[in-house]
Amino acid sequence: MVFFTTLWAQFLSTLPLFMLILFGFLAVKVGRWQKTVTDSLTKFTFYIAFPIMLFQIMSHFSEHSQIDIKLLFVFLVDPLLSLQLVA
Image (cartoon, rainbow, N blue to C red; front, side, top):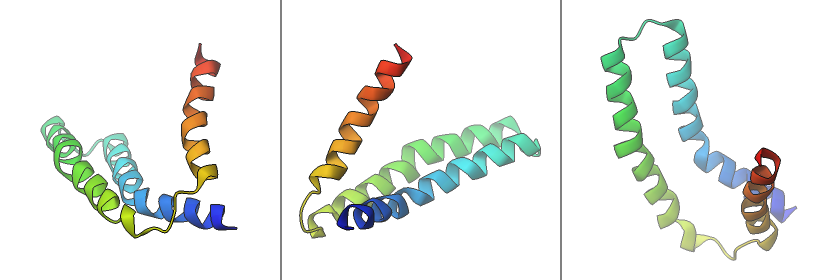
């Protein structure tokens, strides 16, 4: 049960990033945005918002009790499996 609690906490901490990505995707699909606005928001997201969010997550990382080995295993093995499927 601790595994799912930790996984849910990680999901909630990264949810703002995914909401930003979804908002940008929908704004472009609707087509009401000019290219300059999209370029400016992309720069803001990757140069300001994303590093701030990562810093905030990492600064509170020491408050967690221990690293869950199962969760770490999932984050390390999943990209390797994905690479094997692509190759």
